[in-house]
Length: 307
Image (cartoon, rainbow, N blue to C red; front, side, top):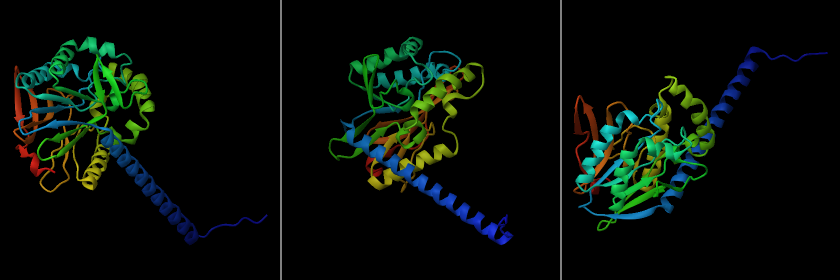
C-alpha cells in the first residue's frame, strides 16, 4: 500500500493556508461579537425611559459597588463607610443619585436579603433618595437574579436596564447603561458566569484566594469592551455614561463621548461622575487616615461641548 507524503514546501503551504483560515475565522468571530454588542446597546437605548434634566440639575453617578453579605468575599464592605460619607454629601446638597449597575453582588449571593441585611445603612440612605424622587437604580450583570435581565426590584425600589437623561432646552441626550451589554461573557453567557462565580470563585475568595469582582475585567477584556462601546458611541453620535469595566474614563477633546464611572471596590477610594451647573467631571473620594477627601480628576467640562 502506497503512502502519499508531502515535501517540505507543500507542508509549509498547507500550514500557511490553515493559519490564514484561522485568522479569517477569528476576524469573522470578532465581527459577529461586535455586531451583537452594537445590537444589544441599540436595543437597550430604544427601550430606555427618558428623564428630563436642565442646567440646574445636580447628578452623581456611581457604579460597581458589588454590595455583598459582609463576608470575606464582600468587596464593598471595606469601603462602605467611605461610600456613605460621599453619598451623604450628595444627599445633603440636593443631588440625584444614579447607580449605574452592579450595585449588589447577586452572582455570589443567591439571596438579596442577605445583602440588604449586611448593608442596612446604605439601603436606608437609598430609600431617603427614593422618597424624594432623586434615585435611579440600573441593572448590571451582577444584579441579575433568575432571568430578570431587563428590570427588577430591590427592597421595593424599581431597577431598570438603562435610562436617557434628556436636556429640557438643548434636547441633548445622555444614555446611561451599565455596559455589560457589550461583553459577550457577562451578557449572553451570564448563567454560566454566575454559576462559576457562585460555586467556585466565591469559595476561593473566602479562603483568601482570588481578587474578586475588582479584577474580573482586567487587561484586554476591559479594552475590548471600551472599544466596542466607543464605536457604538461614535456611530450613533450619542453620549454614554457606563460602568462595568471598573476603569474610570473621561474623553479628551475630539474623542467619542464615552464616560465611565469606575467603581467602588478598590481599597480606600471610589470614583464617579458629577453633573452640576451644566458641566460634567470625573471625581474621586479617598480615605486618607481619618479624613475623607474629594478630588477632581478632570476639570469640569460643559455638556454642550461633549456631544
